[in-house]
Amino acid sequence: MAVAERTVAIACQGGGSHTAFTAGVLKRFLQERATLDAHHYRIGALSGTSGGAICALLAWYGVVQDDWPAGVQGLEAFWADNAARHPWDAALNQWLMAMAWWRDFVAFPDVSPYAYPPWGESHLRAMLEAHVDFGKIPTLVRPEGPALLVGAVSVLSGKFKVFRNERVTADAVMASAAIPTIFRATCIRNLPYWDGLFSQNPPVRDLIDDVEPPSAKPDEIWVIQINPLKRRTEPRRIGEIQDRRNEMAGNLSLQQELYHIRKINQMIRNGVIKHPKYKLVKVRVVALHEDLPLASKLDRRPAFIERMMRCGVEAAGAFLRTVTRPAAAPACTSRLH
Image (cartoon, rainbow, N blue to C red; front, side):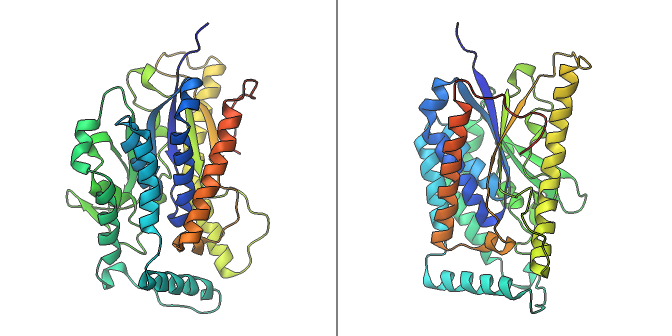
């Protein structure tokens, strides 16, 4: 009997240099196209916030053109460009890391990103436009997918904004990556937007809500998670406390998104929901299992970037072996782990 095709939506969490892990996971997924095809998996959508949005965009750009190796090359090239390889950039990176380390002992004044020229924004935009022809995106979007969703948040209203498919412009991705303590807000139609880490990291519910027809909804959602749910020890130094607080805040939206899906699954199983617009959706997670300090999200040393990407490649390999194992246990839809 023929095995039915299973549509997968991949949601990519963001978090600075740690997002190189996400790039590594996506790289392995794209390299394993034959494995996915053999087990009847089809990528139906990618979503992301901040660095996760950039990774989702680069992978989608290859998949939508049916050129998966180009997606791999895009992910590798972008993160190679992002690494601090030039002497002046390496020195700046070292200084920023030292400042982050000394925060436990010295109170440094906060400096608004509006107090200095937007060099960082200009550099990031140039990297994005070097690897993606944004003017081409509307011509690549097809009704049958794959879809692309990028998350940001409106500074003035506080509402989360999802830019979907042809609305994913360079400005939309810049808005998603606009960390307010580092970058200025990105204005779209005269409205300022910040990094979506403050609202949805990454967009998950939008992968299934208001998706028509119901058959277009994914059968599974694969979440690439880089913010740890748990820590082994109690944070006591001010830097450790701030790190843990930021991790918990970054995961709050993800937990709410997944609770929504788990609740719908439960009501379908219990017969409470019988409407054809709803369907069971499995949730699987590829997680970064390392206790990394928050400051390392700013670390752009080539060795660190490459290490994060290798971790992602290895984690994705283990994940795919589990997913494609003939007698694999059912995916977790009742809790995240």
